[in-house]
Length: 147
Length: 147
DNA sequence: ATCGTTGCAAACACTTTGCAATGTG
DNA sequence: CACATTGCAAAGTGTTTGCAACGAT
Image (cartoon, each protein chain N blue to C red):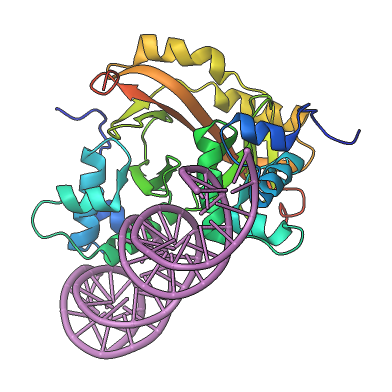
């Protein structure tokens, strides 16, 4: 057991449950995202793919499908690149990204969840419902801090 | 006095202070960003520009200049579009965006600032310094909540 | 056999670069 | 007059679409 979290399900089965066909691409993609517990760009997914990676179009489509079903989350770091992260059954968390090398680390604390409703109730004139939020920290990792 | 905040300076003077030339484009851009207290895309800047808007290339360059000097902030909402917001002397804040119509509202509360250092000290193995953070809420505004 | 999924090429949207012309200090 | 700034055209990057071929159930 060297996994950080145990999702306790068979990937093929899960895909079918979600209404997908258990294709090579989607199986491998889900495995890859599960194994790599951090936000990945399509480019980096292709880089770390074992064997011949699928066409990037296919990846974008598969990721869009998985996002629609709540299996994957999209994360942004103010750099015009979409990052994708496995979400299902993972604890809610945020990220720190190094602005020099792009290293990403999870931040497990989240005080935002508790604030969400009170923020709306007290502060917002125009908004009625908040269904998600993102918190990203920008900084420098140990390797880059003195570069 | 119908401004939300009083920045108390002359725009031309400020631009020169920052090392820029006080050109028509930069003056009007800064005024526009100051007047519109929320994140704007380049497209929307062109839309609301009074008179003939400058070339978008010019806007991107001017915005990059202003960001470099800390006058403007870039904000992202997980949609691959860069938004730009006046920053100088404005209180630190975050945003709520409506995922249906794109309406943006400021959120003045921020508990993150206080947490920043303790997050790093206690939680992070790889990061030494955090210099900024972003918090965005996604939801639906009153107009869109029942659409 | 049906209909979801894929690959390829082309289109798209947003942003950046090169270079000559213009404007500011 | 020097040099920052601008406009235009072209290129760059990340992402999406159309369509025919393929593959899972």
